[in-house]
Length: 441
Image 1: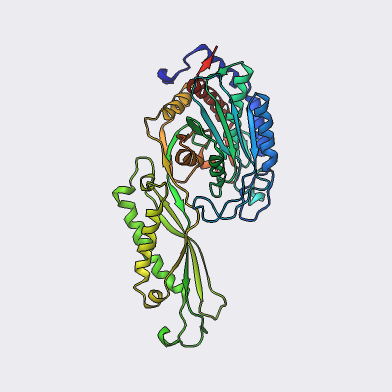
Image 2: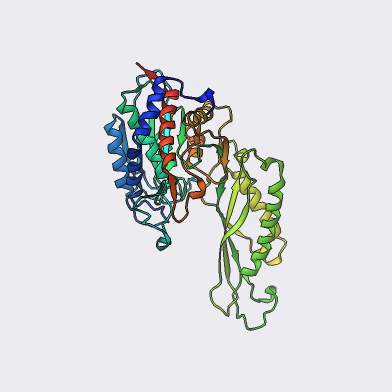
């Protein structure tokens, strides 16, 4: 252990010991959360156990004196570029709770998302994914590491402080949101509701590293128009009324995508100390109506990532979108059919990246707390996206991810988190709260 980050007081030693002695408590809390079905939604999916889980967390936080706010946001409006259109939150409430400090200290946000990816194919799990089970020192179940285990560690840390009678000077702001796995709409709703603090920790499974940066992304749809005709009948040139195969026209788009990808991998403005260069690729393709008919249309969906350094002054990725559309459009325009029947684009919600400076105090806080419980980490980044970016970008709350477990265990069959990680993480959060918010008395 690095002595510079060792427990610095008798209080910190007591906190670490108290958390360790209550291993069963944090494990049971994580198991309880796993037992709620909060499978990430597809559009139109009914609510599952989101409200029951949030009620459970609300009751536990209120028991330690927090003022809790549980609400269903209004449906998203059309034209808000940061969230999908017409997404309702019926049965999917968001939770924000504030444990008021004595005054004079800094506030700290503790954040986690309650949704977890699908359990399917469920029959391939060793045990019921919605009934937590310990095997070989690991807690198994859907969401164990991503990220119900992290939420459990945060709540348990707050409960441990309360049990020991520790009074913080600054406020603790706890926020549990939905929809991280699908769109970021949950944390966006929380930011619009006013959730913010001086800095924040998000309990993603970082293995005690500190994710200070992440890439953003968007999934545009491109619509290619063709002209139907009998595939078994010779067709004249399209200018003479012949059929046009929309699926084959996709080949031009694919060539343009490859050119952009090759360029992006080496461009100086796409290099980052913690993140891989962005990529662009086709993830969905649909086209054709009948086995002996020229396809009249082809629709493709792209996965486009972009870097924190390419966020515009207005907090969007518009410059990236403009580049992609212009470069693919220019190649398509070289085809006589597509020149007269241009590609049509739809740009869904903009998942904006963010980064926190290496020397920001919240980074040192997380690294120091991890080291103090024997789990030294390093500064790193996430090539995907996480809710920490939303609070950093939209709430003025510099937020990093720091949590138990490995991202390699997320989204997999037999997802798990080491029990030791849950205990150490809870202790690290307790230390972070004491060090950041300050203690009175």
